Amino acid sequence: MATFSVMSTFAAAAIMLQLLLVPATASPHMKYIDAICDRSHDLDYCVKTLTTNPPTAAPIGLNPLAEAVMALTIAHAEKTAAFVAETAKSDPAFADYHKAYLAVVADLKSANIKLKQSPDTAHYDVRASTDQMKRVEGLVASKSDQASTTLKGMTVEMEKLIDLAGSAADAVDDDDENIHRRV
Figure 1: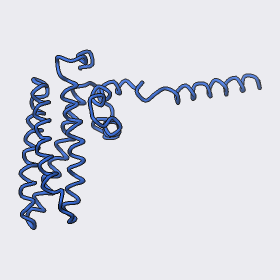
Figure 2: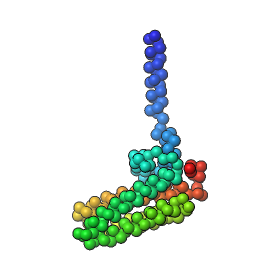
Figure 3: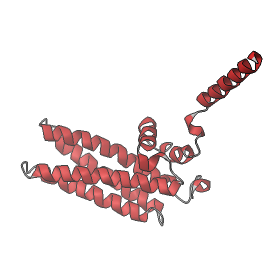
Figure 4: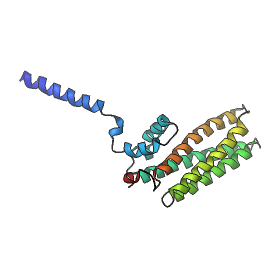
């Protein structure tokens, strides 16, 4: 009886060790996340973002994941545009930032619409919004007030999300090596 107990304990320990040693990328969902994150400029940020946000954490396919990434990016752009619009009421310099963020929102929404029919065009629309982020960075760089500091942080986050959205559009592109990952 004691031999059976020792053997079952050993077997349980072996199974637990195997589960601990299996890399996270072995998850069936990780192949879709990897398809996007392999294209991003910040792999760690990409994996962390896509595995910790509920809409992107367990994708059922590459296209649904890309759509969720676009939605996440658009939501942040809209939140930042609202912050900038509110701040512009007391600081007219923020009106230029607001225009830039409205352009980003428009570019991202356009990309989201085009994602299924024309991922190349969607990718271009996402990357075009990068110019607006550079513009905001340049305008706010020398400012040190609280609202500008907040906007700088939001803009850094926006740039990272734009990179993810561009990577998502690129991953669903019809003429690349990931056609087998589409659902």
